[in-house]
Image 1 (cartoon, rainbow, N blue to C red):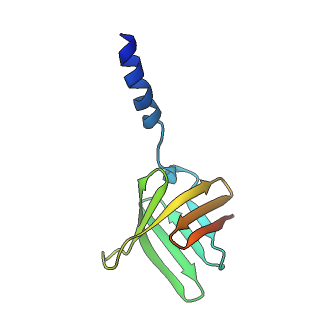
Image 2: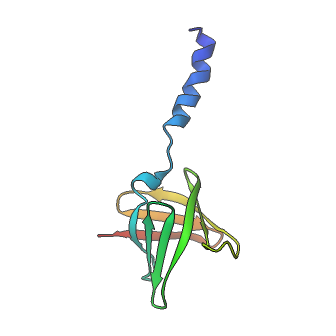
Image 3: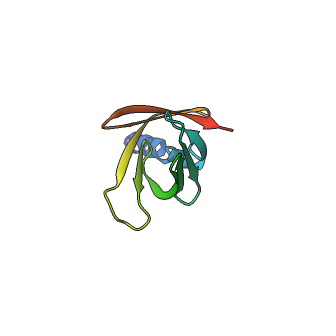
Length: 106
């Protein structure tokens, strides 16, 4: 291969390794700062629970750091959150109102 081709392949290989975090760390139950629970499940469903009950919402990864939430019936506007940080124990989501730190529930 010619050297110029290597310079084209390196960024493509790097992008191929950047899978959205839904396959691992994001899945599971997360407690919100207000005491609610967001449970991310495989298949693009997140169950949001709080003192007024629970609701299932669809989610999808727009890219490796952006989650879009939308009602299953398609009504209303989708809500987007940026993933500022994601570890095994902490998820920091950010939207127009600022950051929100969620803790993993075991």
